[in-house]
Every structure is written in structure tokens, then in C-alpha cells.
Amino acid sequence: MLEREAILEDVSAAVDGVISREQTEAELRAALVVLDEETPSGPDFVDGEIIGIDTVGQTITVATSDGQECVDVSAAEIILESPPAEGGADAEEAVGSSAGTITDLEVDQQVSAFGAQARACFAAETLVVTVEPESLRGS
Image 1 (cartoon, rainbow, N blue to C red):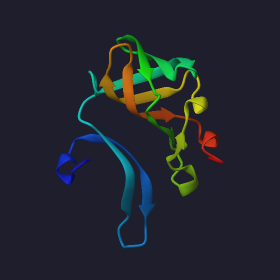
Image 2: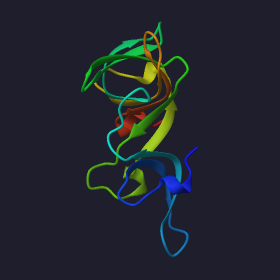
Image 3: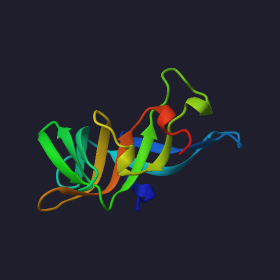
Image 4: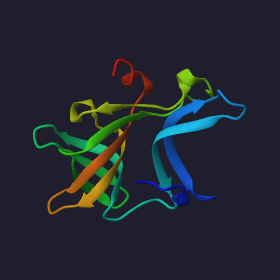
């Protein structure tokens, strides 16, 4: 669980939530916050592009800056995240997300996996996948 003390000045973050303008100042109500003091790396994080999907084995292959990484998504919570439209500030164009499954994944999508290194594959607990906005409609 993320504590308030972890949010510091000059630390970049990816946030998925809703902006409420009910009060005099806008307030962000976030469902997901990922802090990024520097680009995460190591045994807790895999970041890159999907280059292979095995729906039977429930694994994906990710091209990272260090090579290829097998990621086991069988126990992962998969979050499909849509980036904001360029130049858009409307709620319709804001970042959105929905729950997904391995069948929603496609080669060439950007992915961030959070979990731990296991023997054969990185065991993802959470998988955040960047998708096109229309992929979220009807989810």
C-alpha cells in the first residue's frame, strides 16, 4: 500500500483516476498510482513491448532494454490503460482503464509488469498494458 509520505516533490508518477471539480480546486481521486523515482528495473519490474503471447501457458514475452523476458501472467491482475488523446483535456479524452485478460493483449503493446522473478519466468502480480482508447469501450 502506498503511504502519503512516499509522494515527494520531483518524483514522477503515473496516475489513473478521476478529477473532481466539485470544490474550488480540482481534486484527483486515484485508483492507481505508480511512483517512478527513476526508471524501475530489477527483480520487481519488467517494462517493454509485447513480442509474443502464449494464451495456453498464460505467458507473454516482453522485449526490454536488456533483451527478452518471459512473464507469467496467470495470476496477474491485468489493467488495460488508455493514454490521453493528444491535446485533449476533456473527460472523454482523459486516461482511462479497465480490467483485462490475456486475450485482450496484442503483440507490439507497451507493458509494465510488477511482481517477482521466478525460476522460468517473471511472475507478474500486476500487468499494466497501454491500449488504444477504443479498446476500453464496452469493457
